[in-house]
Length: 200
Image 1: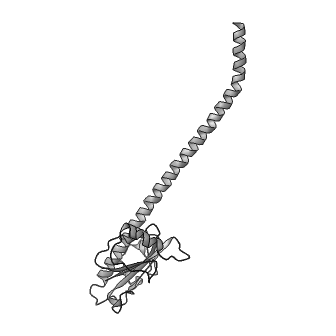
Image 2: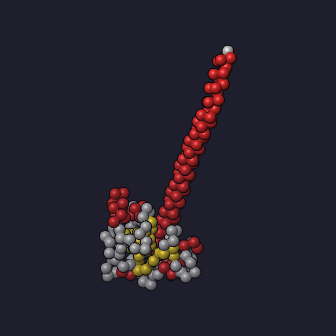
């Protein structure tokens, strides 16, 4: 019995340091796992809010565009054409949300891009019978805007340049991705595509 007890004591003494090392090792592994899981959760939350923010901005931009079309049509409903149309003239009607305009009569998208409005540029001799709206959107938003159905009022839309290929109806998913990917971009705004719309 004494011999067995002595052996157990020796084993116990030798085991304790090893046991502590094992426990310490497990603690480090567990801590690393917790940190890794936390990082995954944080990344997921950030991605979710980024996606939600992008979706909201896209919806707001679409709403802005349709509001502008409506305000321009209403403002010029009694006129023979769109001669004299400017961004400032539309801003001064006070028909737009104050968040879209500033004191200088400029209009901005929800993403902060300057909106330019004027008589038509792309429809030949009867330019004043059309009006144009142009502004920049993010690379991710471009295909969504390209697929947007703007009704029979749309005369043409171009992506990246005034001389780009015109389209007069919504693009399908594949074409919208291709057109936006190949669209010209300014050296100062590589993450943005300028959209050129013409309406009647």
